[in-house]
Image: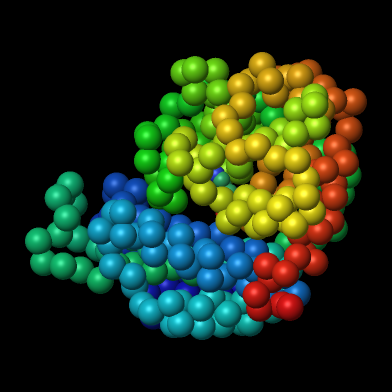
Length: 286
Ligand code: PLP
């Protein structure tokens, strides 16, 4: 396997960054995960838009132009012979002697890009049974709209979920409303058949998969409300699912040990999952 690290394509097993990289010292950096489908980047431009925004919010420079980033992502995919899988891209503020302040002498941001192959059938198998989630108190900083590599709360919440036999944790804010998953956006279909997901304005990362699914929902004329939903409402839901570039649309069949709906993947989740790759959002695959 090959990884791209600061200007070079290197053997993945030997790839590394400096011990004083601010990503390593302070989690001072951001990342993106982009799906690869049939050898092509899925929604590449939208991921680059979000990367640029995350970097701007942290006042880190783009490590190279969008065109160059796209080229390197495609080159990493090509060199690793990835047909289906994921590309991971990380940009940190760079390498400098450890000090909380931004480096006085500006340093070049660090850029790492890796890819991995995944078996799309494995995801489909999982989607046929659905996943369990467990609720978890929201304990992240308020700027979850920035896709930073500072993911310790997410790591702990997801590990907690796994130890409960679940695949994902759903954060619940102080008012009892679900924000999102540890690495996914959260959706329910209410008992009245209305699809609901939380607005992107507060408490969540604005998922690219979420945006694509919103386009599908509009196109299909599915009844939909963008509003916060409570954990109580989720227990009563007819169906539920999560979205992320790594899982696409994944049905949720259990919440805190209780079945959602009839305990099987719901029809809306199943339909949206099926339509995901045929949707016109595949700018580069059309
Ligand atoms: N929310 C969080 C906290 C995430 O980490 C992710 C993805 O990793 C998402 C939502 C889903 O975003 P996307 O659909 O862009 O993968």
